[in-house]
Each structure stands twice: as structure tokens, then as C-alpha cells.
Image (cartoon, rainbow, N blue to C red; front, top):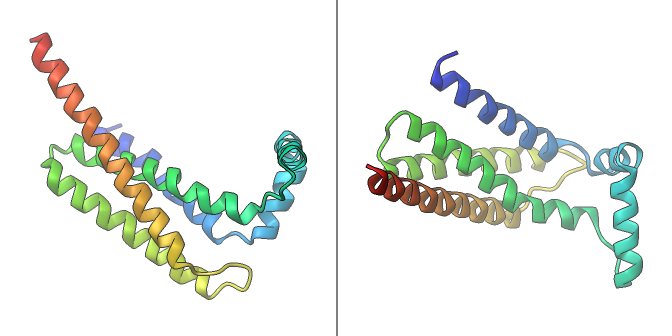
Length: 151
């Protein structure tokens, strides 16, 4: 398998996972969590009981936008880096791709009865993407510094 295909496969899979989770009805997600992940449901119940506040699945889902898009961006940065693309161009391309994906999914959610399109989701996704770029650049800089020191 070529390098591009090897790096594109996890990227495509993760984008599909994000799309499915973004478009799946919330009640379906909640039902699956209760039936398939009893430990998760018990953890949620324990936290609610100890903090005396209800934990809304919608809130958790909104919080997850941030790390999901950070990881997606990190994967895209790695994909472009393997193609020897300039880091600035890579960052801008990655930001554009993740923003367009986010915008497209929010657009689709607008037409779904069980989901809501949200500007806040777009901001969280964009923030996650910026974090992913930042982390990648830090790691890339450290890797280059280490490489220089080793040789």
C-alpha cells in the first residue's frame, strides 16, 4: 500500500465517523449508549448524583466537537506533510477542509428533524481545528529540532 493510501484510509474513516455521529439522531445515540455501554451510563449517573446536576448528552456532544476536530486536523496535517507540502500551505488547506466539512454537516443538520444546525458547533469545530494545527506545528518543530541535534 502506498504512503498516501496508508495515510488517507484512517483520515477517511475518521471523517465518516464524524459525519455519522453528526447526523445520527440524538435519541438514537443516547439509546445506543444506554444499551451498549452500561459503564458509560453508570458513570454519567454517578457524576449526576455526586454533583447534583443533570448531565445533558447534547452538552457532552458539543464538548466533543473540539477534540474530534483537533484530531481530524492533526490527521490532515500528517497527510499533507507526507506529501512534502509547505507547513503554512498545509495549515491553510487543512483549515479549509475541516471548515468546509463542518459547514456541510451543519447544513445537512438544518434539514434533519432530530438535529439542529448550530453556529456554536462551527466555532467549536474551528477552535478544535486551530488546536490541531497548533499541536501539529509544535510537534513538527520539536521533531525537526531533534533531527538536527541527532545529526
